[in-house]
Length: 294
Image (tube, rainbow, N blue to C red; front, side, top):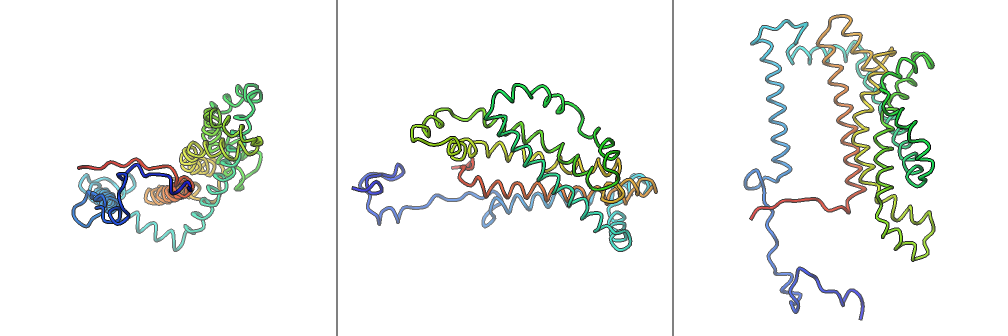
């Protein structure tokens, strides 16, 4: 008798025929937004409504309060300034440079954090020796290194990328290190009884167990990378959205400052969404917590 034929589904009564199983009523999917509207669609509509309300408030509240444009410009003025900067101020070029620095800093910082976290997690002695220095470097404000990197490397993209690497490295390294240290020892011993090598134990047990923590760190790092790169451009940049922000501030162009902030926000949202997409692709086997109503 095969294993497949000998198993009995826990959700089906014993002795139920195939036709009875097929004719069983399927559980109803409960929607939140009324008939014909899925939960995802309802959530998207609510988020869009909030965005519209925020933009409407941004447009009318400064007029209602009679706020000067150099303090709080209305949203339409920001849009006009964005179009002007797009046509004459090389906005797309600055946006692309900052996006490139964020992506490179995030990827290199994530790889370095993953590598160091795995090495220290699998080697207790080096972790004990290096932990005071790692803690000291973690406590030190990462953005304070930006002027030093500019002095070393000049007004290039490298100081910004290096600040991004440094600020992304720690949350990923700490998450991976903690996950490796908390792997279920029973799972490790089970694989060892099957004569698995050290590499196989890491590949089959330890690394998959660390993936949820890794992606939690990646979510945090995707937003921190934007902060690190922006600080680097504020301190010693001659291109990028951070430089554009400082340049607009020096000219008293508040609308231009808002354009740069919106551009940085878009880069952060796209980076975070990319991490969420990759997490869903890699961790599809983890069941989602769902709530249903009777």
